[in-house]
Length: 184
Image (cartoon, rainbow, N blue to C red; front, side):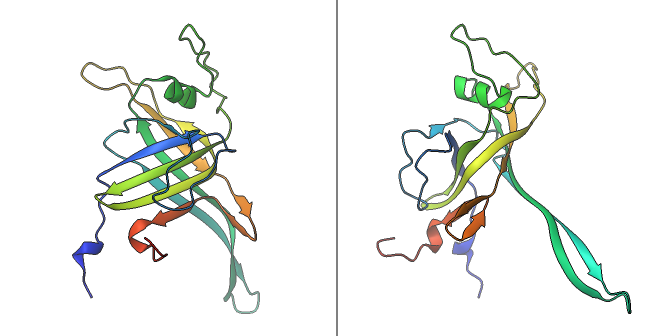
């Protein structure tokens, strides 16, 4: 059955970074720990989630039939442009600490190491929360200085797998509209 109330729009949201040791969220609406830093305004393109997967087909010699397909590589990334020029964003973009005099030493090979990221996607009362417990900035975009344009810090965060109990994953997503636990 068609139900237009199930259509979500990413009206607004937020991106947070924290040390990998920070307390992780457990649902879409729980308050984040004080270690989670709001990275501020994100460009109007929002956040792009990309999942990639490569596989190898195994075929039989006798008839060339496909017998099995094995996943050989997989990854998940989140790309966004940070618009605020502030310490946390400069350190994330350049992978280096900002000195007390406001300078940053640029070494193109530095990533800044692994961090925890949380992305909130908000549509009125509905929230989609993405927890990337072990992520790293693996790509940065060009730095453009142009009249009338904001200076943006384009980053791509790759989520690395973690093992939690008997499950292995790179991110957790909660959909507040799908939460059926008591009190939700």
